[in-house]
Image 1 (cartoon, rainbow, N blue to C red):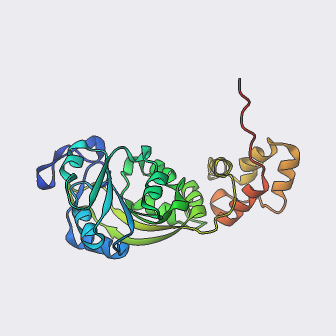
Image 2: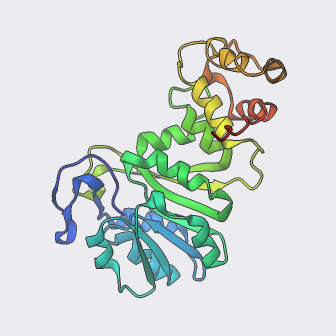
Length: 279
């Protein structure tokens, strides 16, 4: 596991040169590794997928528990080091290009996703994974601590925002453990944390693109009341749509005061935008 925090190019654990462009910081604290593996509790026969195995500290312990694992690694040198490990299938690719539905089809079951999400692109990866939430049993992921706080944030706080609403729509989110910089070689400049994300079995039936647009508009100017942002956006839609959607929705609040359920209910009352006409 190699978190994607800021850091320079230097020789890290096991003689591998940590690459700045990949944000490589290798997990070397055995106690942290054990805690993550205990939280995951992998069993033989389960379809485990590890994102960002790095030098394999976590990979080795997962394999000891479950016997087989698929690892996604972008760094070709690290991928080469991992190939040949018994029970390990290595996919050398950018995780943003990986079709997790195909992996679930091949396994014949829902996936269990584990590992690091590179911090500089953690949000795009989380949204990429959300496309396959219905094919995933759970995902234990390490992120920058402040991102974990934003994901799990409740309404009313400064951490609550678009990421909170979108991900809490599809997942139940539970903090697992905090991880200090000293757990890595080389140490990152930020604190890290692990969260468990379990896909909700009955997510509200809303259009993801519409919900994303709605929430983005709502949080575009956090200090303003929603009547100045979301209200104007709603009024710009068809008049009938806006009138029906705003019924019972209080626009005299700021975006961070609105619970996830209310954003979902509002999105459900709005019809999806029609696809653009072909030229």
